[in-house]
Image 1 (cartoon, rainbow, N blue to C red):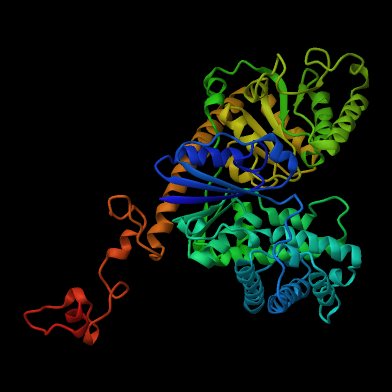
Image 2 (spheres, one colour):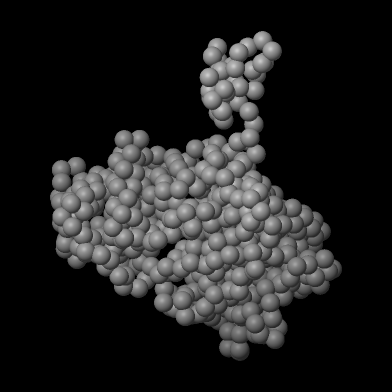
Length: 565
């Protein structure tokens, strides 16, 4: 079949979200044809280039969300009036929505409000298709005034009423960026309209592209969310974002997520934590599937199958250094561990994530020096100091597997976590783990490791001590963890799950057209097999309610419709 793969800020670019699993998915489904439609987020992402794509990728279409767009053709008076009406309706829905800054209020939208949002969105999409784009209109004074009137209207949410001109300008700019797929020429019969299925690799703007393909061409949509973008909008995607801007943009993305879930044929998540968000936002439970991310297991095989030769007194933490990882609690926990096990050591392996991560790393180093003042005079090496700060790529730790192999117990101390990739890597290495109960951690571990509450150094220390003192238990948990990871979190199971979903969706999709190859034969999946089953859904019925295939010419006269044929 022909798959339109929709991405935002990721594949096929070298950097960005979901690039690895998308690349593995495409390469693992070589029997299908893929078209890539990618939205880039930054100029740097464009400069860094793209990954090489396999031969069965027919085309790659890209569009930038970061650059100043072409304003598009000038609109006539009738078009301007249509735009003003549709945009005013969209703004009214966003401003009258419940306070979107609070996740507790992210319940399923009222059906009437959902219809208002969808009607306004598709009215703008129809106008953009007819007029060749709406970029200029979305940045116009008309849009700004409509947004201001909606914010000042009776019943507007409290945060929206505080918006002033700078906040309104910033909101209008972000809405234009989010609505930029409306102005793309991706929905014709020779582009996404020719696909058997659209697969959005994330929610948000990428999924909006699939919504428009479904609207204009009837292409069924599959949405995969391994990282919930809506959650980031609730928390505030940029530090210092004004409350009015954050509330209005979160309101838009909440409405867009609800509309996406309503129109999608199937919705997949990587864990139960994300699935609960999807259900709360109105996703039909019958459409939901859990497909765990697939990991490349080959690079962890040697460590996972080798006898455990690590120092039995060493703990390892590995990941991106940032405040959400709560290394300060880990250091306080390790101070308790050292009081009872003086020979214990802690290796912190990872690079800082941006400027905030760099500052946090320095803070953690200073804290370690205060907690172990008698042992911090020398260089931070694994041989001389109980706490070492290292990075992958050096002579001692050339790869992630080497980092996990360096200790007997792997620790995760996060307070915020999505799908814990590093934890799965440790499981593939056959390591016993101690983790905090954040995000999908408990679901991933599934009884093969110890889980403690977040921000509880005492509980973290007690769990680590229990494993450091019991080598048999460590070995048993490590073997169980590796077996679980090989069963649930491999590339093969991920690719197989999506292949089955593709077949399921297309087999139930209505026939939109019959596609022929060069010899005049129908292309596979151009018309699903179910469309050929005789019955009332494929042919007119005879009198008395009988389908044509039940007509007996020996007893019944030929019906008029049949004789006409």
